[in-house]
Length: 224
Image (cartoon, rainbow, N blue to C red):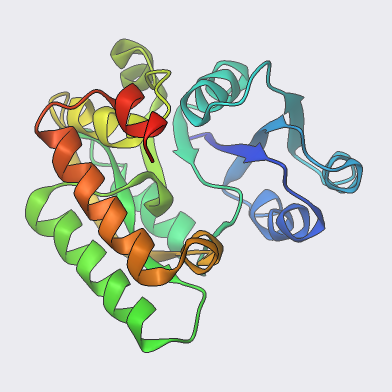
């Protein structure tokens, strides 16, 4: 099984570049395809020196479009979509590869944790994992993985400004079984800290409810 990791990156710098190094060196990872937009020269220079990393300049900023762009350039038969500020814990790649030996599974996601010491972020991660398991609704920052042939049949991600991840996973579940792994992906809390924890939590919850009620993602993005 060839594993291709696809990473959409926007205005990333040195920290994100160095964070991808261990993943690129993992023996089960065939390649890391970075679909970059407007990233720093240092980010680009570091990645060009890491084995198994393909740095590609995506034509436009849009996470869905960037992930489709990266997937089109990949050679693996299992795709893992990972945000540039997210990191897999030790053993996560092995658990994913083992789970996907089950031919009935189309894909899945990891459990979430935040790289922030505050108790409220531990509670937030617990709630996200409960939602993922109970409602079958993990978000993109939990690291989606999917068979390449399934991804192609689904037509990839929609070029939406918001909720392209939720839409994709809803369609993925209709193509076959899925799994929420025990391994976790650590994601940055920088967006929550920048917007304000409670403000971001309220807005994100309200927006996902509105999306599920049928409000167009374009309208939601405009008023976010």
